[in-house]
Image (tube, rainbow, N blue to C red; front, top):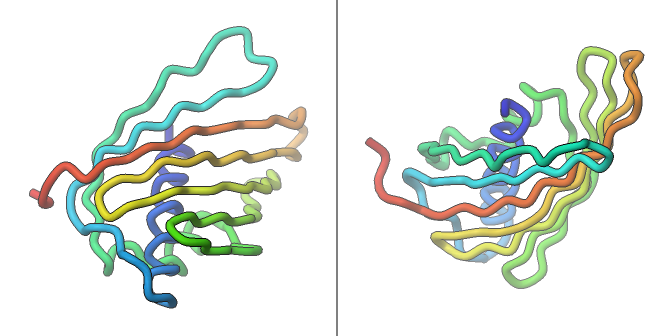
Length: 141
């Protein structure tokens, strides 16, 4: 669940950094409900969806802080119309992770995918495919 929360934070950080650098609609600050559904090929059963609520402000979502705290670096990011795609790399506790993703967003909603491959730390390689969707639900409380 922590990984899915980190993915949601990275998602908003990427959208905010793109909005700060280019003239595109920004993501509305406030309380958001985020649903993530992760699939791990080879797992005998499905991982349940995770629904979380998080208050987002532009100040709390500085991309450099989120990426640094999670040992990740952005390798590439592209914006086309209302779609953001990226490649990233993370390294922590002997694990190396590479990921790609894409998000289609509007001011008060988004949907997309994030795919990550993990290896290292004497563990077999794993693939995680996560579908994300979010919606603005009101002001922060």
